[in-house]
Length: 247
Image 1 (tube, one colour):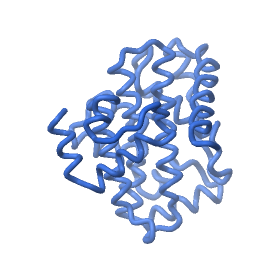
Image 2: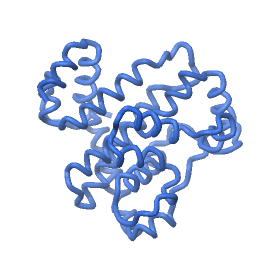
Image 3: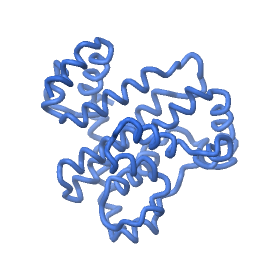
Image 4: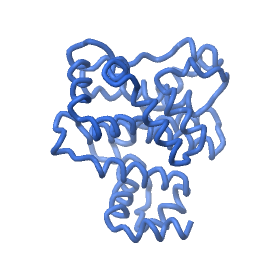
């Protein structure tokens, strides 16, 4: 832990970005986090490593080069999904390491969008415009223009970086969980549900068709009856964030 904290502290920009995020309303901490080491002690090593990865990826994006891609809204969505995925895990009595995996997968589930938009800005702009024109979901249009989705690209990248399998699996299948045959609770189930609930509870744009919740998958998992409980809990998480932010 000390080594990771020291490495973060050496990068002033990275340390500032992580501390700004940790002290924001998204975490709702009741104490001020003053150093990377303090963040690691409070949140755990894996969560802070995911935050470093997220801050690093989002920080590399050139907003001026791609004005049609709203980076702040995407980052806000990823943070909200992470919090909701972790809350769903809490509601299911999951162990702490599973809760952390849910949070990390939620935080990183859309990194593939950044990779695609950064490396192929003009083509990804076509994806966005097609979605706005009502031609299909973001997943449909990515497959049409790229032959691959942001979920596939993100999972591939995270796999190369050695991120744990449960997180990679959740990122890979977060739009198509029914292709995963395992029953019961998992980070994939949490992220798939949290992603859909975040879009439902925080409407960023009415121009986009939202990928639906896979109700057959929830039924097969044996947890479909828990959806109202999760929705209420996620709404409470959202309300708490607004209260902490003074909005």
